[in-house]
Length: 259
Image 1 (cartoon, helix red, strand yellow):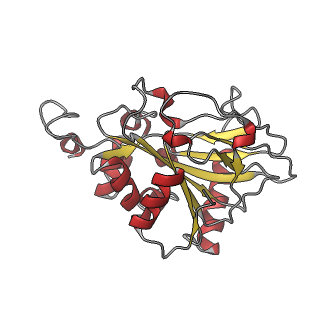
Image 2: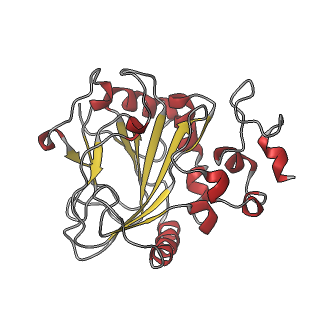
């Protein structure tokens, strides 16, 4: 299994093949320099009023910006990126929604995050079909020195729960404007930021719409904000139905509550 790295012209099917084999893929060149700079400045602004993490997972020197779509319009295009959504639809199926969109600002001195996998929060038997899919969007160059994501290639195929060793993990260095796509059952974790600069990025995590998302967007993002969002983003924030009727409000489609 070699490192999975592609250009922005890659097709959905090729990415899905790489994800099936190794559990992750890097796509470079999805954002230009101006887009990266604007999103980085906005995340720095949001992080300045966001408290530091409260535990080893969040990171005691990391500002995690939750309720991202209630606070900024700078990242709507990432959630709706056609290549990302094309992959999500192939991996999770047509009925999915956002689970945990988060802005990440790792200050210098942040320590290494323990290895974990994202769908562990759901008490499902192993193995099971893919129910979570994640993407990391670096807003600066991600290097081993500033704490880039480590992944354990192929760990999404493990048929029994076991914890990997650090020797099994590899660091995924990538330039700003790229995206790291990975399955929800792939073991991974951020590295330590041993540099003198913050490491900034955006997580866009998706989940099948028959499972509860990690963040309750229906409460986190006020309806007055949701009303002005693109219809597809409204659906991704929970204003959707899993057929035949899971998610209704007073017997009707939840979008009706937006008027």
